[in-house]
Image 1 (tube, rainbow, N blue to C red):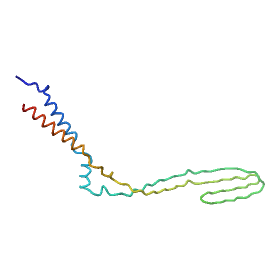
Image 2 (tube, helix red, strand yellow; image 1 turned 180 degrees about the horizontal axis):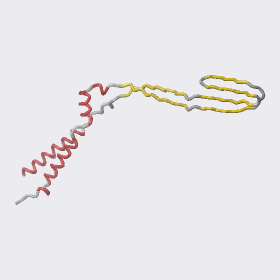
Image 3 (cartoon, rainbow, N blue to C red; image 1 turned 180 degrees about the vertical axis):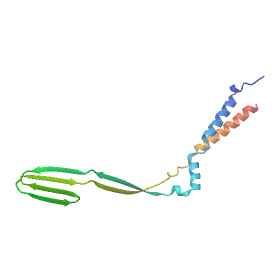
Image 4 (cartoon, one colour; image 1 turned 45 degrees about the horizontal axis):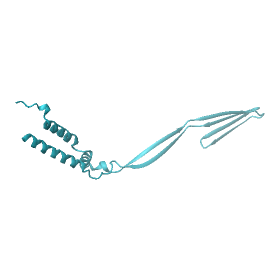
Length: 143
């Protein structure tokens, strides 16, 4: 009598258990511990410097007032240049505010690695279930 392996319940359970074991394998914390063991500098706190540059655009304002004398006045204060030109009955006001660069530098410390989580017992529970299932499958195949 030939056994149909596709319908054998024990084989299907064994395949599912092997698949579950392959999927469970090593967790991220195990890989993180290995990486720290190889290079302990990855968990040291680093100082990160953030540099922000703000550039204001140049602004120029022109205005005119009418008078009767001739004169030129130029004022420079805080990088703003004001020029008053009085030519008989006309006053020309030229105001120039050049573009400005403002730098904001901040320093912050950044941790490279998240703090370790408490021990996870579900991994051992998975292995226990896998072992019990494997024993069950072995007993079923012997009968």
